[in-house]
Amino acid sequence: MWLALSDGWLSIVAHRDKPDHLLVRARNKNHIESYFPNADMYVNGDADYPFRADVLRTDVTFIIADYIQNIAYPNYKNSVDDDELRKSLMGVWAEMAHYGDKYRPVRNTTHNNEEFYSWGY
Image (cartoon, rainbow, N blue to C red):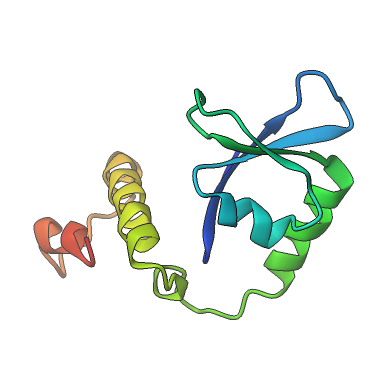
């Protein structure tokens, strides 16, 4: 699962060797440290996500649920302060917007698509 947070990007998957843990991964160590400060983070320099932590499933559930409970922003994209992270997230947003085009029930004709997909990108 990918989690796009206001101040981080995490990849969370099942731990291969510890069924009661999840493997929390990041490309920026601060993204793990800010959400899981008590986790023992380690580094795998050969991995796509080099920063990693084995975190109990219950702890991940609590932390993510707390984040959701405390969402106060009405616009996610505007909640991201880190310019580099925002630019990367806008790339993901644009790709997913293109993906969703064929599923859109009614084409929005109030704007041209080129302008729509270039917002903040």
